[in-house]
Length: 468
Image 1: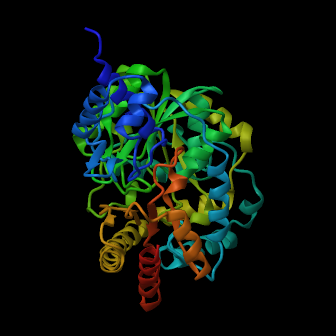
Image 2: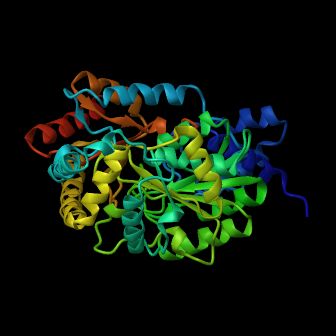
């Protein structure tokens, strides 16, 4: 049976909204003008708009016309966004924000970097000092790919907490998680291929896609439930997708985590379409619950998973030590890692292995998780108190990032610039997507020292919102 004309028109308009032609909260084309543009009756356009209202995509305002909904959290799109390339403006903006994050004079709500008080700096200092006294020659020795065996052993032991039984030989040490993601993408894609990413997603993933000349399909990621699996399935049915990049635990920037049922469904869907899952689990050990969730790689009936993580968020960002478990692609990944850097830093790997061996890491994690959860509640309370009515705030169960949706008339990039002039760093939602769909969103890092100064800074950001 042929699709009704009004439904075709509704799908076209919905696609325009998804592609960022009409932004959340803005007015769409009037009924009469749309009727003239498409050369169809007014009644047909009214039917189309009524269907879009039923889908929760638009809303009617009496005497004013039709507007895009402010937030579309549960929209089940009939059409899937076409693969797109990362625009030049995204990496340029990201670079500017990263430079601002290095300014010690700025209160860093923007960068996803924990302050030193949340890192085991003294323990690492002792580990490094011990190595330099007992084995001074190691700082000059190469640590060839796949990396220090002592560290890979410790990682294999820690992976048991996530349900994974792996051998040291299954693990390759990388220069942070970003480097691991790059290796994973190179192993399963070629230039021009299409991958799925969550939206919003970590801006480093968008940079990796741009550098590797890939195309991306954005699938909504919701703060309360994670990646939209119905939308993902529709994308997989329509496009030839080589990989799906997903963060199942404490996703950056939304803080969402997938339930056990959602993990199983995600694995099943991707397995049916022979699509590799690239699992970014960099925040996995920062869940507030005593027992962390199992990783996607732990489900042995699904072998098409590549696991990426690092110690950058939990132990030492500056050490730049990450790892990748390549599964079916392990041999290829080791080759890429060796070809790119030949070796990885020796001293930092051995120091981390020593730190992990003595049992200090688990004590550190228990203390840090508690501090982050306390900071999260304090930060949410301040935002609820000082930000404009209509602001929504995520409530993550781990990590140290909040995803904030502001009223539609507040531009987060303008807010970022205004706050920066007053020594307050934020990061606008624009950098977390290929399309400009998060113009009134921002991400807040609460892994910082909370005191009267930070309280005042949050209050001031709220005042700047009110001024807009």
